[in-house]
Structures are given as structure tokens and as C-alpha cells.
Length: 154
Ligand SMILES: [Zn+2]
Image (cartoon, rainbow, N blue to C red):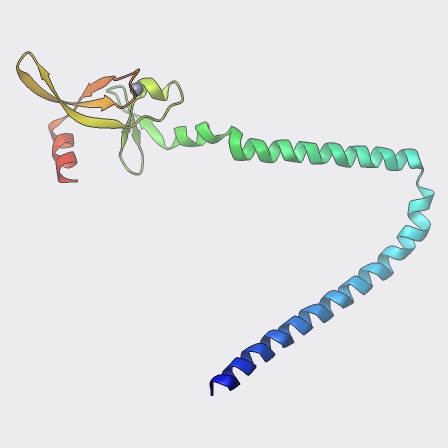
């Protein structure tokens, strides 16, 4: 039973491979038949200077496409991050999906610094604040009672 399943699986794989190979061979023969008159009659009639210009134009197009792909991949990163946040009137930014807070001071310097809820003792009075986690900044914003409850539940 197991040998039959094993053979069946290999036969199907072999058949699929053979069909794909036959299609590829046919396609290669068609491309060769179509392109051979072009290579024999058209390409030699184009001057070497024109071919050189064509190669140069293709080279420039490749460079432009590479720069464009690089810009799409790396250049727009901060802009995409910035779109995910909205400004809170207290002075920091809030992530639109997760609701996480990031420091407004660091955000203007293109740094995504999350705020952490901490207790602060000020002249014997205890208050909860959102504090930036970057050492050079340490900016704080007062936390509301709802935010403290929500943070304690999570
Ligand atoms: Zn900060």
C-alpha cells in the first residue's frame, strides 16, 4: 500500500515535470524561430552608434529604476511611521491602532520613543505621569485616571 502511494506520488511529479519541460522546450523553439530573422536582418542594419545609445539608455533606465526601488524601500520609512500616529493635545503622539503613546519631543526629531507610566512624588504628593524612555529627553506628561486604570488592567 505504502509503496503504491510512493510510486504514485513520484509518477505524478515526473509527469508534471515532463509536461513543464515539453512546454518550455516548445516555447524556446518558438522564441528562437521568431527572433532569428530579427537577429539576422534587423540587428546588423542598426548602426553601432545607435546600439551604443540604446545600451546607454537601458543602463540609465536601470539606474533610475534602482534609485526608485531604493527610495520606495528606505526613503519613505519615517513618513510611513508618522502616518500611523495622531497628535494628542497634551503634546505627545498616539498610535492609531494600538493606542500606545510616544514622546512628542522625540517624535519631532524622528525618534519613536514609547512613553512609560511612572509614579512621581512631588512635595509629598504622588502623581502618575507618562515619561519618555530616552535618557537625554525624560519629558513627562500627566496621566489621566482612566489611563492609569487601563494601564493597570493590561
Ligand atoms: Zn522624548
